[in-house]
Amino acid sequence: MKPRITTIAALALLTIGGLQAQTTVKPVQTGTTQTLGTDQDNETARELGITEDQLSRMRENERKYGNAMRELQNTRAEADVKTARAKELHNAYEQETKAILTPEQYTKLMETRKEKRADAVKAREEKLKQHNE
Image: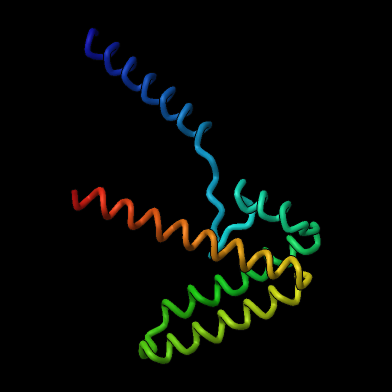
């Protein structure tokens, strides 16, 4: 009788713990290479003065080219062919982005991207420096 009660109690705890874990998991957005929708991206959109229509069009643009890039990665083409196609996709993505935004918004977006890249490089260098110490 005692092992049966212990088993039932263990199952109850596992079930309760599992239910709690299910309610605290946050959904992950997939299907984009750059996810417009994070707090930081929403802040950038506000800073740029991007309208809801522009934001919707940018998300669709990212989805479209993100999917195309993933498909390209999964093909068995030669590396140089893949690289050339990736450059074509990137250029097309940038042209569509440029068409969606005003010239001022696009310029500010490029500046923001440049700053983020510089911050990322600096963070990697710091991490590498700490690792080597």
